[in-house]
Image (cartoon, rainbow, N blue to C red; front, side, top):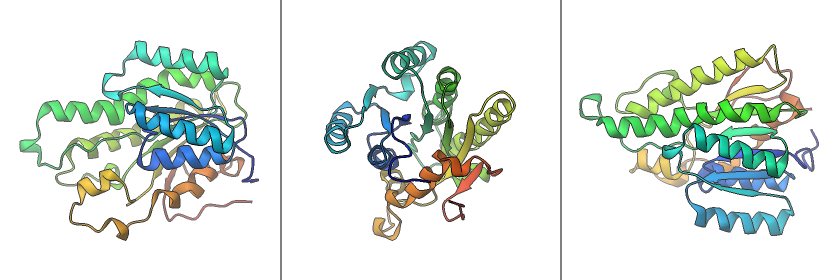
Length: 248
């Protein structure tokens, strides 16, 4: 894998691009030449990142202001049309955006918050995938990368809708991978970044020293591998931070 330019000219959509892991991915993948389609509800932060990567890396980024709680089929179609008009095709989707909202037992978990977390974390990924997969048909090395968590593998007390949403993401990625395997060259991965220094981590573990956890930059090698040809022969679609990955 030539890390200097292997993403040059590639068009990659990242949800939750304005902060945390999404922000780090946007900057780092731009450094390798990718045109990042930045989707987030925080337009002010997106504007700042846009100016920075445009000046530093001379790529062709794009801002899509969208609150995933409001995402529906019509808005997804609009997003697909914007990408088609500006880039002609899509090479990768990184479903990164997620919310935690609250830590609570099921008995005290309110329905409104439950539905919000599932909409942002799970349903939005389904709707976007539904309408964006068709834009990946001409890509040489197309990828869809979902972001999961250990509480999606095994439900954990008090993690409520977040845990359920990540279990759903695991199932969604498996279904999509199975459906696309024989009819497309799109490769689907599910990535668990493990404990990482983000605002969500601080919300979940307020007493924890943030510096005790790795920074989002530590994840870049995994994303570069998943986006590269090196991962094309991998049979493992569930990737975890700390797992050994083979690069040429």
